[in-house]
Image (cartoon, rainbow, N blue to C red; front, side, top):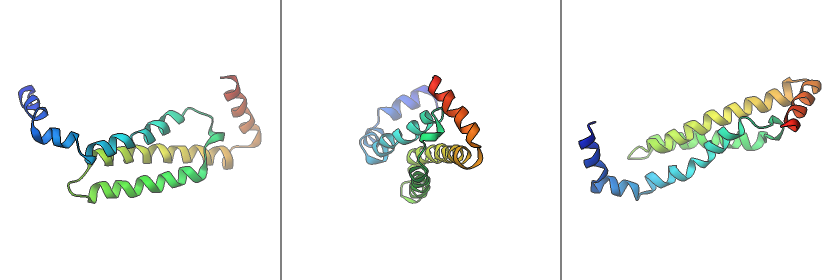
Length: 117
């Protein structure tokens, strides 16, 4: 798309209507979830809630489907929940690894590492 076409589209009534709709502001508000999850990827896995992570995995899966089925399709909402789904699945992997795979000795090493920082 050329700069002229882009400028024309951004100043159009259609684009302004989109910016004032829930199709735009709903997903923008939802981006807090995946951004927080991505920020938590470097935090201590001991504090990850398995129950909450499971709930967020199902929540994002359901809303990805909703974003595709609703008319018109809301790809901004889909991208938000796809990102959250990936982050939550990664968090669940960290949770399972910490609590069910690692030995107590390894868990203590991880705890000590996070106490130092």
